[in-house]
Image (cartoon, rainbow, N blue to C red):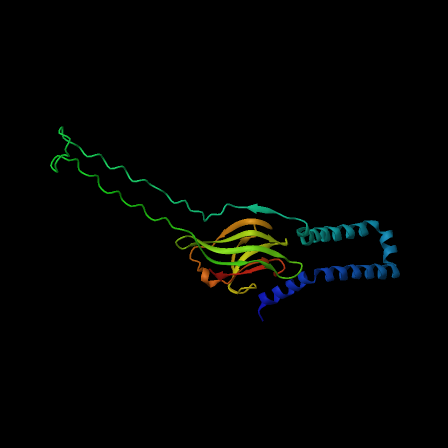
Length: 240
């Protein structure tokens, strides 16, 4: 059995049905309190307030941070605008003015023997590399709750150097979000390339692909929650 696949399935199910699980947990807690009252556990807790207080403190110490970790992304938003690194400034040069011909006192041009030698031809400047977009696609969310907007594109910024660029990007926030290039267009899959933690929920920013990466190996850019193995947004990439 593929343990990693099983783990992803379990945590994806926990996140997908988190609301139902939360409601079920509240009902279970209410049932436990009812049983505790019927069996006299609450009366016992009143007789031993120190023990009861310690249990409450332990429960809050675990439950509050976990609840904030899972729920806080619903209202926390961040924005980042990074300059587009693909802009290229083409150097320009103006040819040197040709020297005026020397003339004799009689106003005639000097002969070849006395003329000023022409300057050596200027070495042509190397042609600058022009960045080019190789593939692009639009983001979409994976369900009604997990929205995704904007574009993703793979750009060659120098020979053999590539970036993944997000523009006009926005996504539902969540815990432990990372950006990947996936070998399939619309999901996380074995062989996905991790590019780093999601820099912001909104904006325009870039990720450098590791040296030696072949962009043609990937068919989609995705935003993936590591903690719960859940896909938040995907941008299928097509050659341009």
